[in-house]
Length: 334
Image (cartoon, rainbow, N blue to C red):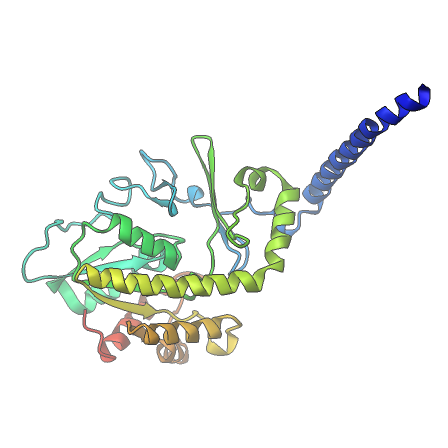
């Protein structure tokens, strides 16, 4: 009888022992990682975290995320998008400006789309200096967006702007997924480096160092697959943008920014992605302009290249002026 009772209890005892061991592992792992604090778990301690390719941006530390008084809000299709009619973006989807939505006769309307380079408007300012008031300059750049998000935002939220020419500022960081994690009304929203089509759990990512460590390890083990997936998404996004812009009756051009460092200091995948971009745009029949020679000449002349500090992604106004001059010499006619 005693042996029979013991035989019924051992699975329960084994289960409790395993659960206790698992709990101890989690608690010890959390404690160890919070003490060790490797780079993979320091995901929520600065606005911009990680190296290119694994950047994490907490946009609500710079741009308040709130549908009533902020700049961004949750969007189920894009992850996040500007608040239309809010602090920075007008109801038509572009940033606030002094233009009327109805296009006046005799003026060409230029609609700029892209990521933070477009948002910061150095190229737009340089172009307006060259072209003057015969054009309207509409800025619809959104910080952190990839090509896929730029396509979705143009498709879903910029349709009311009758543009004559849509100009995409393409940067090599468009081949990266820009992870953004923020909280809105108790809801955690994650646009993060994914594995396949799987995104991490935002609550665990925020609260568990062990989960962050494990997810980062899995991401590092799937780098090639994720890179190939992003390259394919960029190509598909450019093709779809071309078709949609044409369907809306506008011209389409792409300004391909170089990595803002001497070319001898470029590291893979930067050279390959730059070449891939030019090859893709040529194959798709999309008018485009590149600035490698501009970059070489600017460095040789000692011009300031970066907007601030040593930033390989955001050009200074001086370098933007050089790119605009070269694009016009190459035949760019907005």
